[in-house]
Amino acid sequence: MGAARSAAAMRRLVGAICAALALTLTTSCRPVGGTPSSSTETDRPTAGTRDVGALLHGTRVSLDGALPSDVVVLQESNRALIGQIRRSSPSTRILLYQNIAAVPDRGDSATGPSVVTAAAAQRSPGWALHSASGAPVRWHDFPYLQPMDTGDPGYQRAALAKVRQELAGADWDGVFLDDVLSDTRGHTYSAEPADITGGTQLAATTSFLLAVAAPLRSDGHVIAINAQQSRGDFEGPLSAWSPLVDLVMLEHFVAWGDSPLDRGPRQRFDEGQVRWRLREMALIQQHGAGVLALTYGSADDGRTQAFHRGVYLLGDSRPGASMWTIPTASMRSARPAADLDLGAPTASAREAAPGVWVRPFAEGWLVVNARGEALRSSSGELGLGSTARDVEVGARTAIAVPSD
Image (cartoon, rainbow, N blue to C red; front, side):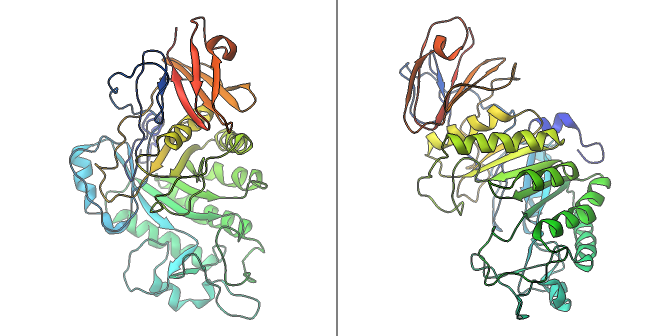
């Protein structure tokens, strides 16, 4: 990507943190993970690569064997893997993880996972958020992090200098900015911040992206952000931020879950929530950015994996990636067993029945069922070409139906 930021390279993001997407071929329909259709299973296909990716979190990870990926996000502490990734997959784009909204409350390293160091923050206590009483505000969900005033001009200058220095220190292609917040509801605060520059978190965050992300992008770096906004107020933040970056992440894309280490089953989104996600995707892409869709889950939760991939493909119209994240410290163990790749879409998605979406691709039809009950229908009723087929889709999951 570099200075050119190739659209072709961004089109096929495949990475590795904790990702697993099961796919099974059948003689009539291909379930995207989960329970097979009524047809007989055959061998699994070769893994596809279209718009599939992931982040690699954690400070101790391993890279076993080749990594057929286009994008990997690493923390600076894992920079030793860069050379190995370059050798095994020269086309992979490697992004540096950085948190913009909080800083560890201790540490003296000149690098780290936040846009300013703990030492720099300690030397400038005015950068921290404070309550009306003047006490520093804390996050209860991440008590080791000190929330910062992202709108403070001094904080922004320090962030730009520090990130530029880290990017120059290794063979990075760009940066992934986490905790890009539209309000103070994204975390549980010890008290309401009373001193945000600009008056609101949205104003402070937008100011930060203009002061830091935009210059980095002008330097030729790929910029990705983890945008956190509420369901009832997403248009303003996404309209302000998407033009400033290359990729916008929608975390918890089709299921809530607070941690990639939570191995429990996920509560998959209903049809109203799917409509919300599709509207967010459309807005991001209309403003020129691609979507990174991230859902946390386990390696054996095939139904949610299918739902995650299917909803992403419904709304995909620009270079982006769907990301399925599981608890693992090995890129190899996190590789998808197979990734659904139906080729290029031939038309937009449509809602064939309430809560049921279909979309045609060059190599088949995608059917996504967001209802709370299984769908039993036919290809004719859903408008899936001229070949008569029974179509069965479990509750809140997806399948692929071959073309005529």
